[in-house]
Amino acid sequence: MPPRRLAGLIVPAALALWGATHAAAASSGLPVPPPVALKAAGFPRRLIAIDNVCAWPNLQMLRDGSLVAVVFNQPNHGYTEGDVDAWHSADGRFWNRLGPTTRHEPQTVRMNHGVGLNADGHLVVLCNGWDKIAPRRNAASRPIATHGAISRDGGKTWEQLGPVLPAEPGLSWQVPFGDILTAANGDLVAGTYAFSRPRGNIYAVRSKDGGRTWTHVAPIVKDRHVEAAMLHLGGGRWLAASRRFEFLDLDLFASEDDAFTWKQVTTLDVKPVSSAHLLTLSDGRVLLTYGNRTPGDRGIDARLSSDGGRTWTARQRLVALDTGDCGYPDAVELPGRRVLVAYYADGIPEHQRYHMGVINLTLDELR
Image (cartoon, rainbow, N blue to C red; front, side, top):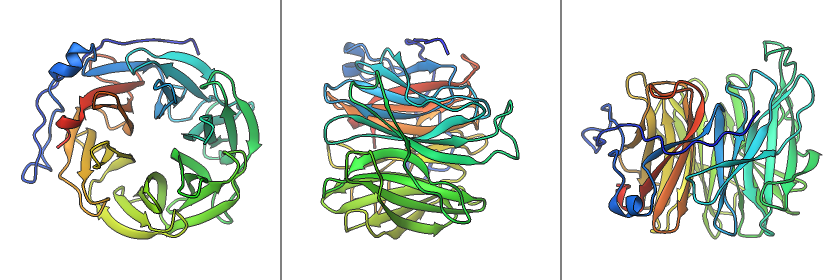
């Protein structure tokens, strides 16, 4: 797929209406003009960052402060052959394609991915997908084994590790999702799931060798859950946010023993929801972002917690979208109290095809 680089598209929006009495009302996102500090630094409010991809983006900050986005590289939901690509940006404004992180076999697609950095600062990718793409994914297609890959040069080249995660009896191969994070004991921890609708189990899987092998699988819950977004709060404290089949809301789980055992904390009634992302901000708050697919009220929303995930603010609309084919946000905090949130959509009125969009905001705008 030819590389594309787009920036500078700012989409009109109006001031978001939110709060306890307006949480369920439609809102139109953050104001179009960015705060003075962002504008002075040359950061627009919104960009179409990577065009013609379904993306499901995962953002990682490298040790030099630059960003890598790992995205699914086809403009569909994994119905055609494809891979996940790495893209690089100095600061989130302009993105350049580095190349594929995976190498799919003929008549397969590599699409579901988890990404992180190991102790050496190397990028680690876990990626699953589907078989029998002939020429499109169909009722006979099944999930394939998750493969691993490691990059020692910031995503330019990748060592392919082959299969790294097991299958779950009666369900599927384990499927990775979200950020791969470092535990208090130095292990890498990734969120995974195995499913056969409506059943779905989520797990915290561990690597002791920098992401080359994954030898310990700890169940988070065995019920009807998928796509567990993980967050290490520090010490042995963890959070995981997972959506449920059928209910399409978000269940939150916590661990106090470094992601070995888990208990449910709460259920957020934000249905119908896409997957979520969790991030600890520099002011100590936890930022939860997710795709809101409610007809007539679609977009990318945020909530905040000041007590480690036990309670949450009312939702705040970040980006208003017209389509229900949207969501899967991922957020990073950058210097100058800037927060960058990436997401996907199948189009907006001003740009009618799949893309990875980004929005710039400041910590002070998150309420």
